[in-house]
Structures are given as structure tokens and as C-alpha cells.
Amino acid sequence: MQHILVTGGCGFMGSNFVRWVVREHPDVRVTVLDVLTYAGNPANLVGLPADRVTLVVGDICDAGLLGRLVPECDAVVNFAAETHVDRSIADPEPFLRANVEGVMRLLEACRAHDVRFHHVSTDEVYGDLALDDPSRLTEDSPYRPSSPYSSTKAAGDMLVRAWVHTYGVRATISNCSNNYGPYQHVEKFIPRQITNILCGERPKLYGDGRNVRDWIHVDDHSSAVWEILTRGRIGETYLIGADGERSNIDVLHAILEAMGRDADDFDWVRDRPGHDRRYAIDPTKLRRELGWRPQHTDFAAGLRETIAWYENHRDWWEPTKCATEEKYCQMVQEHTVMPRKN
Ligand code: NAD
Ligand code: DAU
Image (cartoon, rainbow, N blue to C red; front, side, top):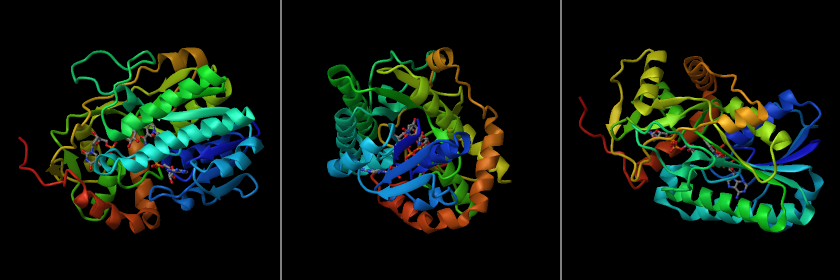
């Protein structure tokens, strides 16, 4: 791999991946293709060497542009997507375009030019698990997506599988659990609560707060994607996870404690419609086949570093904070404050 095309490289995970590649693989050049939606921010790439990283502002649905960019690189890593579940509930249409049509256009370009493709997907395609279910998700779990977001991601995954099977496209898929770390948009759970506290607002917890997410540091996601891209078996799916299951209320309590607030200094708000209960990844295949291991296994330490990053980068998130909270007020579930739970 000498030159890779990273789509969605101005978003949270894409930009962290680009930073990780620049740091860990000095011989690799990166072209970023990003249409700069509300979630894409060129500032996420600031400080990276101009001779190693080039930003092209454009759409993964633009076949003509892909026809020029794709043949110039050795591989395409697709992070571009509409990613926020609450937004997909309020307005599903953009999700179909980016997460389904966009994947098809990328696959067609990779097929035409015989370029390696890695598709970044989500554990949400497998649907949720019950809180008391002892099992975790594996590559053999059935697809059971439940939100407009996850159903479009599932459709994208199916296209990748079909293009491998039918046309022999050299592709892999990874499905990961919830990432955290720097440069994450303030609409997402952890940054929303940290920045609410920094703004003097109370954090917002959906439903009963017992929903479980399986947290992984974004740098561990980047290293896993690199291993799959360079050593993964073509046509295979790999689940990425770091044994990080935590309930939302536990994560919120950890944030409140780290930021010196009382444990009950937050608002209970109305639940997300169709809110998936629990995700949990069994990463055995990735560990056994590729020997991958997460490095950031101390969640409390990772959370403290993430809080410090938001404290020290107010100029990065403050311009989008008000608009994000206004958007929450307009969204279907209107985050009405609910009576305090016991
Ligand atoms: P993000 O919302 O922070 O960034 C998405 C990026 O894609 C933005 O820069 C946006 O401008 C760009 N984009 C959107 N539509 C585009 C288009 N049509 N053409 C070009 N660029 C476009 O997303 P993220 O959280 O970094 O997620 C990246 C990928 O990882 C997504 O595929 C998502 O489904 C997947 N994923 C995310 C998580 C998570 O916890 N955030 C976990 C597992 C998988
Ligand atoms: O599992 C991987 C997925 O993780 C990715 O595919 C998605 O792109 C990513 O957005 C994320 O989806 P979630 O819906 O799990 O993430 P979110 O940050 O929106 O919410 C995490 C949990 O916190 C979820 O149970 C809802 C809850 N929540 C969220 C917000 C924004 C709250 O309780 N309060 C909030 O204010």
C-alpha cells in the first residue's frame, strides 16, 4: 500500500484513521474524498503534512470523480456515511444516498479499475441483544437491523458481498462497535455530554439509561482496519471490538465524576424510538486470524484523555454546538425532560 483513498476522511473515524496511518506508516500517501456534510470538518486534518495528505472535496456518489481518483490508488477505505441514528429517524433519505448508492458507486469504480476495497460498517446491522443474553455478536450472527441508519448500513454491506461474489471485487468488511476519542461530532453521546457540562448545560440521558454499548477507542479501530486492509482475507467480514460493554448511565456517571459533578447532575429525557438495547462484539476472529489486540484497554483513562481534548479544543466544537442542540429540539423524539427516576 503506497497510496490509499480514504472516503469520509474529514469525519470522526476517517480523520483519526488518516492521522493514524500518517503516524504509523510513513511510506503511505493518503487522498481524502469527503463531501463535507454537517459532520465533515477539514479542520480534522489540520497539521498533517501536505505532501502526504490531499483533500478532495466531492461526493462518493459522483461516478465521474471516482473514475479519476480510484485508479490512482492501491486501495479505497470507505468511512463516508450518514451516521447518526437520531437523524436517520428524523429524516432517512440522505442515509439511502450515502450508505447505499454511495457504496454501490465505490464498488463499481473498484470493479472497473480492479482496486482493493475495504468497507467500514457497524455492529448495528446485527440488531440488538437483550441485557440478560450471555451471547455476543459474531460474523455469523444474522442481519437484523432496526433503525433507518442500520438498515441502510446493512444494505451497503450486502452490496459489498454481492460485488465480491458476482464480480470478484477484492473487498473486505469490518463491523465495529461504538468508537470514542477526539474529533467526534458533538451530536454523539460522549462528546454531547462532555460539551454540555463545559457549556453549563445538564447532560441528557435517554430512556432508563440501561442501554449497553461496547466502547472502543478510535485508535484501536484504526489499527484493526489497517490489519484487515493489509492482511485480511478477501471476501471476509471481521467484527472489531475491545470487550468494552458499559451501560449509558455508567458512562455518564464516569464523565460526571471525571468532571467533578454530582452523580445526579443530568436530565432524564424521552427515549429514542426503537432504541436498540445492547450491542456486544465477540472479536475472536480478528484476534485469532490477524493477531490484532486493542491498546487502549483502560476506559477510564481514555475517557479522561477525551474529556481533556474537548476542554482544550473549544474552538473546534463551539461553532457547531448551538446548531446541534437546536437540531435535537426539532427531532422526532423531542427530548422532553422526564420525571426523575429513583
Ligand atoms: P461521521 O459522521 O463523523 O463522518 C462521516 C463523514 O462522511 C463526514 O466527514 C461526511 O462529510 C462524509 N460523507 C458523508 N456522506 C458523504 C458522501 N456522499 N460523499 C463523501 N463523503 C461523505 O462518521 P464516523 O462516526 O466517523 O463513522 C465513519 C464510518 O464508521 C461510518 O461508515 C459509520 O457507519 C461507521 N461506524 C461508526 C461508529 C461510531 O461509533 N462512530 C462505529 C462503527 C461504525
Ligand atoms: O454501534 C456503532 C454505532 O455507534 C455507529 O454505527 C453509529 O454511527 C454511532 O453513531 C453509534 O450509534 P449509537 O446510537 O449507539 O450512538 P449515540 O452516540 O447516538 O448513542 C449512544 C447511546 O447513548 C445510545 O444508547 C443512545 C444514548 N444517548 C445518546 C445521546 C446522543 C443518550 O442517552 N443521550 C444522548 O444525548
